[in-house]
Image 1: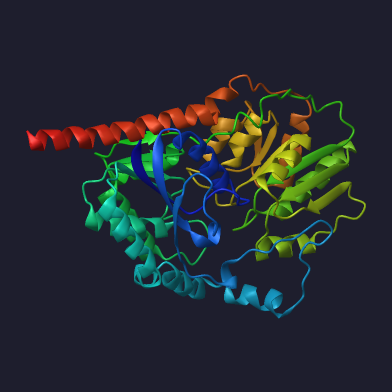
Image 2: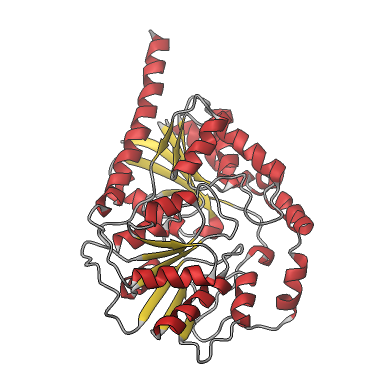
Length: 422
């Protein structure tokens, strides 16, 4: 078997879609490669079950960047000092200063001298056929740069799940993010983009780069049986949002849309939120007045992926909330699990690519407006959706494309090496 290095922010076992994606990919890659995995120790301190060689990198951490885990019946209504003061600290200048420190390569290198010694020893005894790195986390690029300085010939495939130098939120360290994107251009032999918008962004920066669009997927073993259900006959609707709500996902107007739907139809609604909430989302939920509105809000909090799937399967409708400002490139990873589960999707979004994928096919989309949300939800109860083509998003299909791309890059380097020897 060929030896490859996998650099990832997450490993399996974490309650986020990136961890689920990692586990799904590794199930296929372990049959073909021996792997050294390198990941952020905060996102998996234990050894990954898919390899015996699992190095960790350290990163700065602070409660300033952590989200709150709220549970059923407790929406994080802490009135302590942090709850009152943190919004004041989250201004653009303080956030930018903190993130410039947090993402500093100098700081990262200083914290990871032990990792670099491990890599020196590993590279001295192992021939590595390829490096596969998944981002947008900039830390993996710093590890990659260290390896490339010592073994420049190894082909590098960079999977990009989100644009690094994005414009969502405030206080982003633009200079640092631009530098990270230059590292992508300098290091990659090939790029995998998980959406067309991401592919187009990096193709503009790298006109000659081989960039392939390979979307996210879902584990077909988890959703082997699904039967789409008509919503019109249901006297009560259960909506479920899988994943964290942060960076202005506008939970307030969404819930107002549910209240308006109930006013028009008299159908009661339960909204389950399976994930974490940032400070803004907590404050918005605290301010909601839902007594006698026909809408019940349950914040379940962070759960295992297996439990999240159970919540999804029990839902009538699956929910996506994107940032109010929108983007041209976002397709949340949970979208594909929603499709795999044959769940109608209510997406509150103005993201063009996400809308083109979902609207009228797997569900309906609405802009961030209560009346529009109520109208789309009402429309969903009057129709059914077709999931007969869902297997094109299966993990098996995704991984066949990814491993073919990896093999092609390894073969190019191997052919070039043989040509030089001749």
